[in-house]
Length: 168
Image 1 (tube, rainbow, N blue to C red):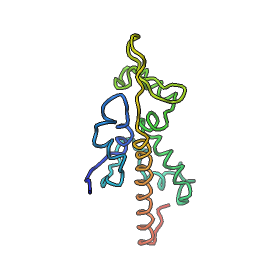
Image 2 (image 1 turned 90 degrees about the vertical axis):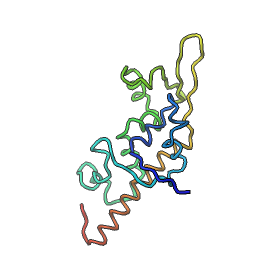
Image 3 (image 1 turned 90 degrees about the horizontal axis):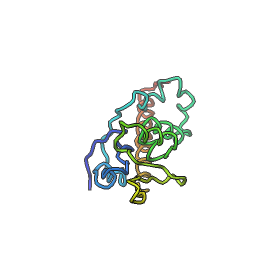
Image 4 (image 1 turned 135 degrees about the vertical axis):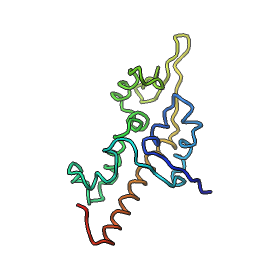
């Protein structure tokens, strides 16, 4: 069953926000459980969140052409996206900063407990609601990011070999 889908990398982690129905119902969220079905990836968002920066920018010189640091690079690359900080890493400082920002309506009332579980506070008459991000989707987002970057770098190295030219 081939599912033809284009996905923007920021959307891969942003869609995990448990405060809306996106994590349960959005097609993109469901695809994170089967990232192999995603066929087109769009590198949108921050200019620093592009795989070619690993090769062309001096700041990443220690990460290329040595592929042994791919996993570390995937984590650093993921940190370019707010959704990665909030829903994958569950970084307390970033979470509290975003939750306290009145412009982030989808985070209104969200809290991160001591076990890094997400809850939504309602009024005082109801207990806080535990909001779940399915582990399969969170893992799928990381696996997807790792796979996409790995394939991009594999293709680049194959091209460099074919051309007999190294970019760095």
